[in-house]
Length: 454
Image 1: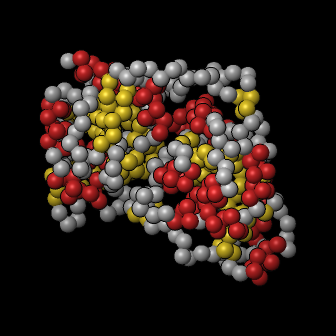
Image 2: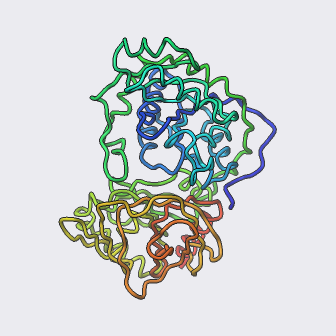
Image 3: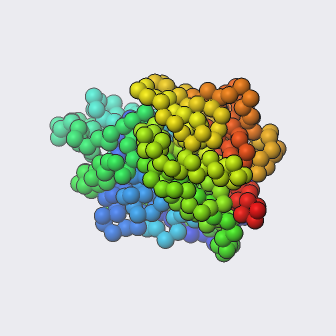
């Protein structure tokens, strides 16, 4: 699987970096990582944010806080070289890189180390700042810290932040025993919590709690010590310069609004590097712009179904698909391209491009990594190639009996019976959020260019 340029120079560059990891999901890692980014940014530092794993929501908070696009780091989808390349390129010009982990520090693919926060920390030789929920415990938290610090000798757990400290007396009980350096004592704060919904936390433009937690981190954490840990990370080899951005040879419309916002930053960059001019538009409020292809990512179409149904963009999409325009839609985009969306209270017409109806369920329908192989012919994908991604959705698709699919999954559920990539004309809708390889992006731009010429 091609993840990018594979050859690095011998030039080493210091990149101060810290990985904020948790003992488990729910320990406060996400809030503390974002609070740390906010606190460092408030001190005038240029902070480059990252998120371990295939997460679309936490990076929106990171980007809003730091003013720099947060990047996903996922060894399963990107490969180890891809993780290094994305990290070193994105961290250029930053004073410090803050990497928010996922789940517990050592939780990886199917109980393994693969794609865990620890795996990413090892790839990048990044010190780990461990977040421990101290609620309901005192001296016992040190046993937890020592267990995490000694579990994998290749992982450097360099500091700890104790979260949900109930009182000065609670802190004093913990301080009587020493373990690794303590970088912070975070008081229990019931008033600072981010709203959640079925796919995770609220997006950054809906809730600014993460940025407001910066003041708490600044007061309760030893920022000079954390900076010292980050600066202790060894230098990393620098990747070669990317070729100059090519002259745009096709215009690709990117659906971008409250309904559709789930995109990997690397995907969009690779489309540009392949020769695309990205044109952002809102399917809720805009007519389809003058473009040669359309990419509709995931998001929350079910929360904005009424506006989507009322917009004339639906008609525009049907017209260009009938004309042969290449369209790629993922998860929420797949729902939008379907004939209708059924929710608990009503039935909304969608774009009517794909022969299927989407139905919202009250429980999760699929969650995990995907490995897909292209088995059908379409300008969007090259037949016989494979790619990786992930799926996470609460909807299901009821397809017409003659529905055609272009993807077979060796991992993941897809739309039905391990098949994904529902196709009509040159429009493909899939539950898989694909991580674009260089070849994948190039193929999509090539399809857009061919359509433009016709």
